[in-house]
Image (cartoon, rainbow, N blue to C red; front, side):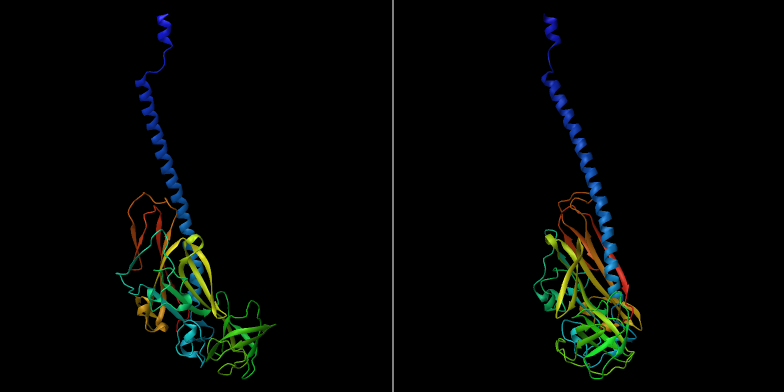
Amino acid sequence: MTRGHNQARGFSLVELMIALVIGLVLLGAASSIYIAQSRMSKSAVSQASIQNVENAIAALITPAIRATGFNGCSTFSRSLSNLVAGGPPPVGTVGTTAAFMAGYDAIGTGGASTSYTISQNNAANGVSASGWSPALDSTLLGSVSNGSDVLVLLGAAVRSSPIGVTVIPTGGNSLTVQDATGLRVGQLAMVSDCLKSSIFKITAISANTITHAAGSGAMENGTDALGVNYPPASQFIPLEQTAFFVGQGQGDQSTLMKATYGSGAWTTVPLVPGVESMQVLYGIGNAGIVTRYVAASAVADWTLVYTVRLGFLIQGQIGSGATTTTASRQFVVLGTTVTVPADGRLRHLYEINVNLRNAS
């Protein structure tokens, strides 16, 4: 009886405690492996996502910068007529300056001492023009994140080419082109005979005949004739004024934005999510040779800008970083120090240089 009872007894308390400790050790090891694998997976996904973002930035911004200042067979510096276009710069100053580009430097210092902090993963959109130097144009206030530089470009529409003019009445407010396909009412355009040119706004399109408003103000008068006369065989060039900046997108996520100016207002669309900061420097010099890079606030003559250098800070998923940290981190984007929150994200700096095709 005694022998059978001893054979049926269960685990002792010591044995149970040992088993529990072994189980916890195994569970901890398994958890560590799972967390490490999860972080590696997030890191791999974020790295691929960041690479896609960089490719998208280059594909979307480079053509617009390359087309800046291009107006067919002529150039902005020698061909502006007595037209005052109206609207936000640079189109707003056409007729008084040969500018084809405008920029706004966040913080306004443009040097190594520039810094700002992003809290809760995203920088809010600014509502005070004094957060930029020169002061941000009022038409863009509320759209741009605090700390983001702004690049505004005026030039031939991307993927467009000059179109031949077949009929252009002297002193009239219309012209006929070889093909008006793809043009739209409210779009900016230019006519040039290679010696002079005028910018106007398309107010109506009938077949290949375009009615335009030009002369002064914001180009709202549909009866205005061009300031000078042009012969048939002149070139018609569709134009775009675009602005690039970082703003708050869907779900307050920091997003690279593109705004297009037309019909007296900006139309803003999100381009690439996950871009936390955009900083811009301008390569200026003489005779097409860049001698130094400066911030927008230091550009005295935009016709001497030959190259645009852009820097971006791109974020990955939360927890995609190599290690978890409770401290904020700093990244230097073209001389601007950006402090980001301790969210365990993988982040990457991306820089590109783009030469202007026809800067002068």
